[in-house]
Length: 259
Image (cartoon, rainbow, N blue to C red; front, side):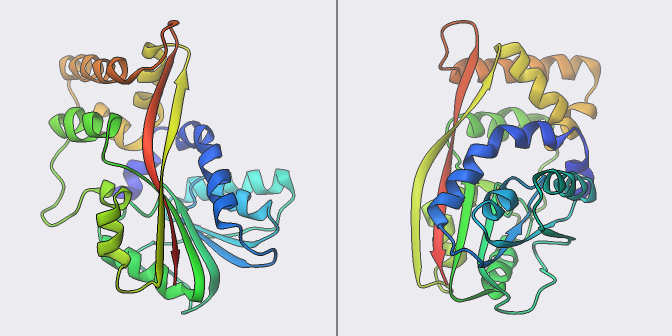
């Protein structure tokens, strides 16, 4: 079901705006050249490429074939030799201790079995290795969208499934990794989404963000109008620009874990 959701819209148009987050995480991790790095839920390859630019030997994994194909095209254009696999973050198709480092930007926070996903990340990372994560935090814009507008129109999640924003909190990271890593360092950061107007921002996400596209397409025409109006109110609330454009912050947690 999640694979179907993320196949809707065009995540390439969303991921392009997140390049800076991947580059910043790669700088923070500062992996040694020649290190074996696994990028989990790699999407269109932002973080895989960021690691390759720092001379790491990168493997990318995602469960959406179309995203992997786009990542391969980008890698070919930049001349890197990244290897990509289709697979599930909850059951990584790699041996124990296969990688010196594991990364994920706004990716591993979404699989439904969060503990299994965390365990798998630790399992494939060698002892003394590093895990680097960027996860949206349950604050500001995302509370109003996911906990408000989206929750009103989308079916409820299955019983027992934690919200993905658990990964964007110190408490959630401690619960998921506290017993399996030797060190946790987290930094609160902020990503800015930008658009020429509030209206274009609303249209952009409704058209290209898979989970939002999935909800929107299932609504009646009248509910679609209501959804757009409520979403526009959220964007207006968080817009920092005062010149007719749109700039709104999205807080996230950057976490470095030492296995």
